[in-house]
Amino acid sequence: MKKLIVVSALLALTGVASAQVRISEWMYSGNSGEYIEITNTGNTAVSMAGWSFDDDSRTPGSFDLSTLGTLKAGESAIITEITADDFRGNWSLAAWVKIAELNANNLSRNDEINIFNGSTLVDRLTYGDQNFSGTIRTQNKSGNTGLSGLGANDCHLWTLAASGDAYGSFVSNDGDIGNPGEYAPLPAPGTMTLGAMGISLAARRRRA
Image (tube, rainbow, N blue to C red; front, side):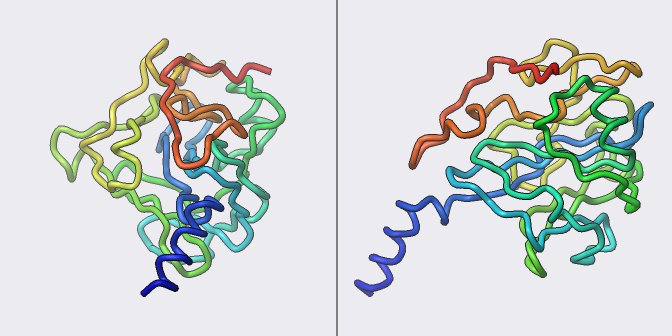
């Protein structure tokens, strides 16, 4: 028992136990294609080697996320069906925003987002305004949720992006509304404090 307590304490100190990658934004249909944002909400870096994405087929390894490298504490990354260059240009994103491009597992109006580490399911969001009454349809506007909604797999907790909202949403060059590349409720990447995430709802723009 004492050994278990010691190991748990060591994990807490190193931040390993609290390193969590979560779905933090999504748009199933946009003028420049769909996208999914994932964010490292923990307080230590996470290597994305062996990680993958899939939709409602729930198959680990369907779309490789290893190209994202390592996500620092508080850092977000994008999964999209278009090229990284096209996505950056449409949303005016800085070069440091990590993008996994050319995803062929396209989302539909009623679908599921699954993030895997190896064969282990890390996060899932099942959504669809036709299947879940009163929930959002992320067509040309992304879906956002607060810290309490991350990892909950409850699409009722998500709201549509609006230009100038608390998540820092803005209008893309193609007329979509979202805030891809950085999750506003978390401190900037690399500034997470040990044992606490803190909340900062000030919008942080990623303009290049």
